[in-house]
Image 1: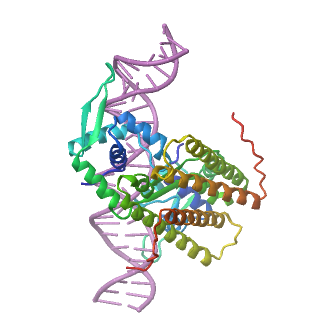
Image 2: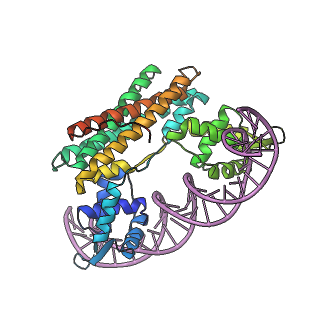
Image 3: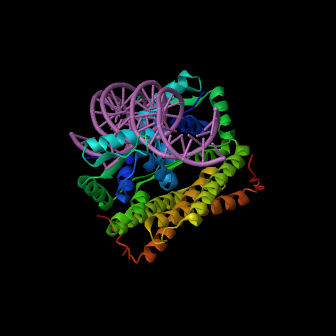
Length: 181
Length: 181
DNA sequence: CCTTCCATGTAACCGGTTACATGATTGC
DNA sequence: GCAATCATGTAACCGGTTACATGGAAGG
């Protein structure tokens, strides 16, 4: 069977340990969000579909009188997960509006610094965020999530470096107004 | 009015010079594709919508008996383009399935090299492609499209570097089997 | 002649986001 | 008592991809 993007992250998260839909969302937001997001609007229906397909089970596990369902992988679910992990390939897609603005910046040169600034801000914020997570982790540093976190940090660092270089070349003094509003 | 992603790239490309839908697609595939794609299925309907909204005009310009429409920006279209370019912000979205696999690789450690190899291949191929474009350009190197091209090259270079480092740390000898099938 | 390229378009499908609706629990 | 958080879900909308359909022109 074909698995949607949301299905993949569900399977992966449940592969780590059983969780509720809410927990999955939390985990995604705290880790894969920057390269793989998921919304409730996809999450819950997808959990149902996976259950229907026999890849996950759900079990009521209320907290007091508060409704709660814990999902876990079935054998079929785990095997689907492993099959995906072992399969070669996988798509990488990027959609970067700021880069597009920069690409067209010669149509209105005065707007270039704006786009470049926005780009720098974006990557700097993301970088800071990931570094915070990194410093707060209690996980062994050889685990793959941490490796991926490091890749993310390196990625944003590289962009910040490049952007600053370009800003210099263009003679923009991005006078570092990094204060909160 | 609100502009879709496809509308933005249309406006930008027409901002450079009048073109047919086909020409826009060619230009996108040759330049922004890696961070901003567009398909015919969106392009043609979107051109119509923009025409309906008075942002572009279309004019028949057949090549011999072969049907062809050249589109150009109206004043309203150009002002919409400039407004977008000048506006702050813009979203950056990434969806990287290979990174997701790597993230979950501790669930099946033997699959890690596969994902890592795929990741390296992806960035190396993209890098080579962009470098080819770069070496073939006849454009002045201070133009923004070239700047963006350079950013793309730097981006993929940084990834290749990181991936090779990680492969080394994991003790994978990605024995460089870069031959075609 | 036949393939490749130029050129325009549509219909079906899909995956995802946003906004909304509901309600219990916890902690100030 | 009130706000924040836990928790589940749905409906409307949207933007995009894929596959299909059609046909003329150019070049080997």
